[in-house]
Length: 252
Image (cartoon, rainbow, N blue to C red; front, top):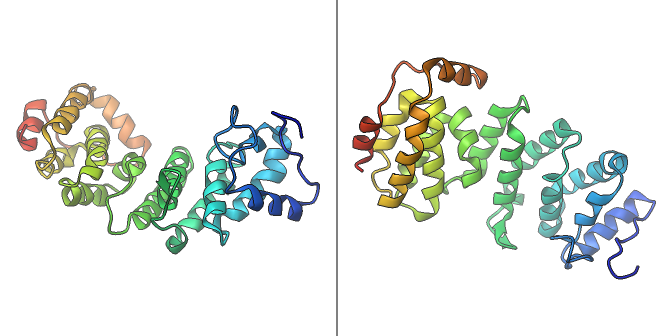
C-alpha cells in the first residue's frame, strides 16, 4: 500500500471483520482524508458498502471490544443505505445499556455516540417513539445528551420536561434545556410556560438564548403549528403563550 492508498479489503467476511478489529484503535491510514481508521470504507462502491460492509458493521454494535463498538456506531452514522435495518440494530444495542457506559474515548462516551446515532435516525423512521424510549433508557439517572433533546421533546415530552426541571442547575444540561424549550415552543405549547418556570436555575445567558429563539417560534401562525404538531402525532395546543408570559415564567 502506497502513501495515501486505501487498505485492500479481504474477500472473506471473517477476515474483513478481523482486519477491522485489528485497526480499530489505530490512527487512520489516510489522516489527511479520514478522521477514523474505518472511514476509508465509505469510499468503497455503494453496492459493496450497502450489501457487505454495512451488515458486517451492524453486527459489531455489540462486539466485546468497546473501541470496536464505537467505530461501528460512528461508521453507521455516515451510511444512509438500509436505514430501517440500521435503526433496528441501534434499538437492539440500546436495550443493552451495560455495553454503552460512561467510559470516554476520543472526546465522547459510547453512550453519547449511541444517543447521537439514534437521534440522527429518528426523523422519518416511523419508530420515533421507540427511539425516544431508548433515549430515555440511555440517559438513566444522568442529564440526557444534547443530541436527544429534540426527539425527546417531540415524542417523550413528559420525560423531557421532568429532565429539564431536574437538571436545570447542572451546567452540562444547559444546552439540553435550551433545545427542549425551543422544541416545546412549536410542538408542546401547552406545557411551555410551566417548563420555563422550572428553568429559573439556568444562567442569565442561557435564559436569553431561550427568549431569543422563542420570539420567532411564538409568532408562527396557529395553522402552521397545527400542521406541525399533527405531523409528529402531538396534540394541537389549546393555549398561545406570549413572549412576556415566557419571560416572566423564566424569571428573566
